[in-house]
Each structure stands twice: as C-alpha cells, then as structure tokens.
Image (cartoon, rainbow, N blue to C red; front, side):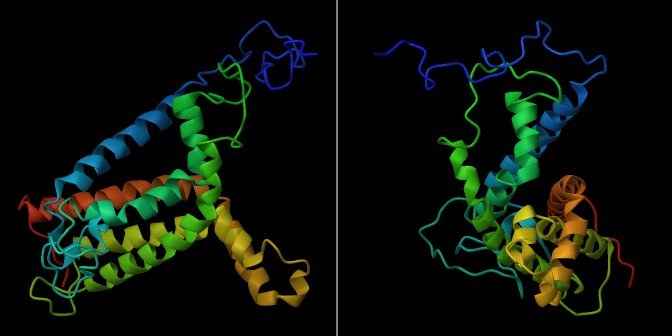
Length: 273
C-alpha cells in the first residue's frame, strides 16, 4: 500500500529527513559568494562575446590570420583564405555563419568538461553555490537524468576537439607568413596565435578524459612505461586544469578579437621581422 513517502517522492536535498538538521543555511563568515559570482560573470561575458562573433559572419580573416572561431571554414560562403583551412564541405546550401558549423565541437568539449560543470553548476544553478553552503534545491538527482545525463558524452567531445586543435596549430604555422603570404614573418599576431595554441593544447591534454585514455585503464604501469609517462604528464597538467580552462578561454577570445581589429582596420599588425 502506498504511503505517500516512497523514495521517488521524498526530498533528496540537504533538508531531507535523513540529513543533519541545521537551522542556519551555512556557518561561513567569509565572502563565499564572490567566487560563484565572478565565475558567472566571466562565463556570461564570454558567451555574449562569442555569440556576437559567431553570428557576425564578418571580419574573421586578416591575412595571414584567421579567427579560431571560424577555422576550419566548412562552407562556400567563407571568405577566401589563401593557404588556410577553407574547405567547402557543406557546399552552398549553408547560408548562416560558417562559425556555427565548427564551434559546436569546442563548445561541446568545454560545456561537458568536468571543471566547467562545477563552474556553471555553482555559478548559475547554485548546486551548491559554494563549499559548506547548502543548495536551495529541494531534490538532487546528479547527472542521472536528462538533460544532465548527456554530460557523459564528454569523452567523445574530447576526440572531436583534437582535430580542431590540430587545425588551429596549422593556422598558427601560417601566421609566420606576411600579408603577401611569404614565409619568414613574425609579428604581434604571431605571438598571440602561439600563446593561444599552447594554452589550447595544454587545456585539451589536461582533460580528465585524456588522462584516462592514456593510462586510466592500465592494471600494471610497469608493463606500459610509455603510457605511464604520458599518464604522469597528463596528471601534472590536470592539477592546473582550472587555470588552463580559464587561460585558454580568454586567449581564444583575445585571438579572435585581434583578428577582428586587424580585419576592420583598427590598426596594422606590428611586425618584428
């Protein structure tokens, strides 16, 4: 006989009968709300900027630089990029911004990233807002239900992010050309692209999925010395995953902004040699 208190109907949050009864919402005396507020503000700023640039469909190429938001360009409506990754795989039927064809892969990789989950869960959903601060939700299901169960596809987005990082590495190599496409150029844009690709690779390889792929399922490290060394390197990077997540997020936006300013004629690329 149903009693109305079946497990599926009970509150599973911090106020549930099985949890300790504490009247105060938290006992912290510091400004614990600063971290989630700053996280939310930073992510909102990036979302607003990247959305504007993704739908702009303009000012994303200034020879020899191509914005990382638009590379590789996969539609016929891409601006001509001499020597760049401009592959019209989608033909002429795609009429929207070509950035929308490629950004889904790095976006999906970051959206399902373990660190970014923590960041926006706390910053936007207050789940929980901070350590030792009770979340306001009456129930908690974790990532076992739709849509959060889709977070489990992170490992697959890792595989999709690798070729995108490879293309951006190619773009960085092309940044060593001048406006006439002659090799031997180095300017401020070259430095911007170099810093960006180093941070992107560091963030990608510090991913928890990468660490698991290279050595997470091994039973005996002694039998796999190469994979053990790779696993160790990934572990060292993983300890700085949060820092690399933010640094690469900022660098990819600054890289796009730099190309935008060059393409709009705001200034000329300072050349070193």
